[in-house]
Amino acid sequence: MKKLGVLLGAFTLLLAPGAASAQAVVRRALVIAHNGSDDPSLPDLRFADDDGVLWAETLQRLGVETTLLVAPDAATRAGGRPVLAGARPPTPDEVKREVARLRAASLADDELGRQTDVLLIYVGHGNTDESGRAYFTLAGGRLDKSSLYADVVDPLAADYVHVIVDACRASGVVGSRGGQTDAAVLAELRGMLAREQLATRPTVGALFAESDDGETHEWSRIRAGVFSHVARSGMMGAADINGDGRVEYSELGAFVTASLQGVKGLPARLTLHAFAPTREPRRPLVGPAPTGPSLTLPSGFEHSRISVEDADGRRLADVRRSEDQYVLLRLPERDVYWVRTPTAEARITLAELTQVPQLSARELQERGPAEEALRRGLFAVPLDKDFYEQYVAAAGLVPVDLSRAFPPAPGGTLHHLPRLLDTLGWDFGLTALQAPLGLGVFAVGPSVSFRKELRPFVYYGVRGSYSLTPVAAFDIKTRGATLLAVSKDGIRTHRATVQGLLGTEGLVGLAGLPLFAEAGLGWGVLGVTSDLKPMADPTVFTSHAAAGVTAKVAGLRWRLAATVAMDLVTVRGDDFLDRSFGLELTFRR
Image (cartoon, rainbow, N blue to C red):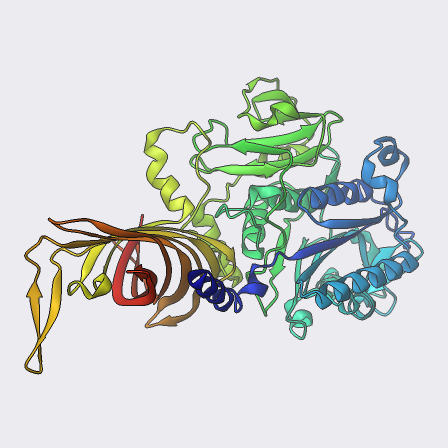
């Protein structure tokens, strides 16, 4: 009972500072999609409503509670997608009603100590009014810069808001705006979401695309807006370059930029703008996702460019992989999927989706020049490590930790093992500390740890260690002096522990090196062997604390730490704390 009380008290102290960090974020989304325009010179969009449906399905698959505001056309209604059952029209009143509901939900979560994120997705027409003010079109109303923030973003009361906009406009509108130039109109639209507008809102981020002619382009082949389709593909997992199950601004921005980079032959090229929340630049947009339909594309998979469609021909996701990249696509639920490459395809049922797809040859169909430009150029550039690092440096975003990547699929060959260990965060090391029970000067032995990021700068894991006292000794007091006497009975001490870890890394640096600190609690075995009789306590409650620096040297990631261990040991029926200071050096490939 004494040990149990000490253990529970130590757990309280260990977990109290990080309790809020360990809680899952509650994510909600408001998807607004509208084909129509209030400007007679602008034709209706064809696929904004389809994009709205796919956005809602994608976010729900990723564990986001989603509300869809859309007025579907006949073709979209005929698809009979379940998300349309609860959809409401994208009117100003419905937007106001949903914002009030989301605000109440966020405030309720705040009372319970839960963090909340809201994703605000808009797909439709962007335009400017007679005064040159930018707005997004609703059914029977508008959402301009003032109302976007004052009536929608700010009242949400969420910890973080992520705004994703796919707003198309036709270039012909400029002539009816009193001589304004294309540049002026686009500047107004851009200003609604630009970095300067977000500067006073450190918990709001934005992601949107534009082109020189103001069109973000719909493509009949995928029945969607190009930007929306690429962004959804990235959020399903194609952008998750470090394989942690979450998608951050830097990852999604790099993926969209890479995917669009190869498109040639269109009137204007799409340009992406990604602005992460300044308070937490690595705040994920989504993830980790709940279990559900997922397509595994393992390292070494022979095909690099993959498309996934449903039985109705709706394009769900696309990805262009590098040769050694592992990708896990989290797909909306369908009974049947078609996995296609430019030269091969396979029909896969929901039950078969867990297997690596086996593709057979397909026939190509050539189309017109604009569609051919998209077919050949879209997703032509893979999101590999080099592209990601160059993009992040140019965009000024905070990068993810690339020391980990997805492991290969089950059944991979043995040469993947070193990468697998690196991927999973395994560290191997050597520890030296004061000998247990005062039986010697020091003890040495190996350690192995597994650490996984819980949220930016916070990780959890498990640690195992073993130490041996090479030469046991005793303190002998004689005539006021303390002498060290070596045991003649071959006494050795053995200490083995397994502990859960909680720590932080990378918040600050020392001489350019990231610092880390961690604490752990667990169970251990302490034994004493000799030529006479072995003894052991197999019920040792043990704690571990460490702080130090990390560095990458000779291709390995090293951690050097000062450590302190506290063991609750029973000797001759009495419990006492045995404290040991030490050092630990670990490495990871």
